[in-house]
Image (cartoon, helix red, strand yellow):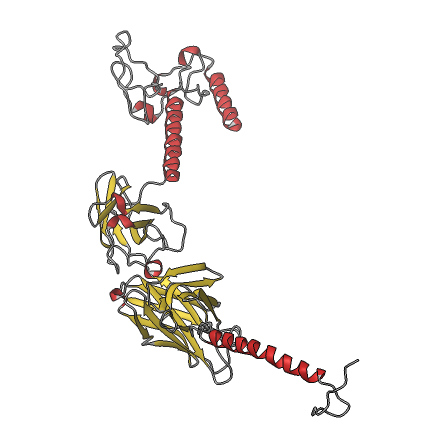
Length: 472
């Protein structure tokens, strides 16, 4: 209980001094605390505020394949990186204040991701850019291919995308990666008004790597792009070899040639050659009689190469064609024109030789058969009219051919086994019978039959002759 107020005190009626004193005491105590807080706030206001890292504002140019970003003070570029499904991560180290990065040898039509790492006052900072292929799916050019031929010409072709709009139009941009030069196709090949190919001349002045970009445009919808990076050496088809000559001797033919003219003019050891040798009249589409031969330019001399073809005389006419390719790629070029060699005399076929041998054998057999048949003694002929029946007169009468030949002393004998094809052969002279030639001929006027038997013998002789004739 509070004491009563003193007399003359200006106090609220019925009040007390205690609450007032407490309020004064609180004010006195809080004033230094407020001053201390105010001072601390003033001290904190003098400290620097944390920095916010600004955006690098990354950009990518599809035509030049160049990635750029904003360069800022107190920011140092460290590294840029390219990531795609085909290649994986590809890194480039940067120099100081460099604010761009080039990825020219990589394709982007399937999408990619770029990252840039910089060093700021707060440490390394990385920013990412996702690059996509805008436009409708399957609207880009497809089946793209290129070919370098005849040293200085380039042909490229492609087809419309499966989902490309009807009014699509494609454009081809070619960029030399090393020269950093770009140009649009000067001469398009069209199909119903749409560009589907390109013809370019002057490839020999370009370097090794080319970047191809086919963009599309349409009023109906967006069209995706297609890009490719090609090494020219892989799409070049060499011309045929030149100065093809053939020199033959009795057993072989020497085929020689010079290497073809190419875009980069490599040494001869980088070439591989293929020879196709055929008999005259064989079509190139038919299977050759002789297998194709590959010859390496490594074994040539200078720009010359050669091949020795075994071909003994007499040789029929042949043709030879040669084509060339890079020995590491073996992408064959065109065939050369046929070069003829040979005399045109056909070689004897083994079948014909066999036929001749068989015919010769048959002729020999027939000759020997005739020889032995003529050497056999003639068979006795039956008695005919005018021949003697008795033993002394039983020798057959000689024919006119046998009478025309000599027999006996040093003459020719028709029955000799030494006769050959009817040619008479001389025989040894018979000294015993040389002066007594056989009287084989009967003179009917000198024949006098015995008395009393002439008629009977004559009848018998006639009957015998008739019987023989009847039997014959």
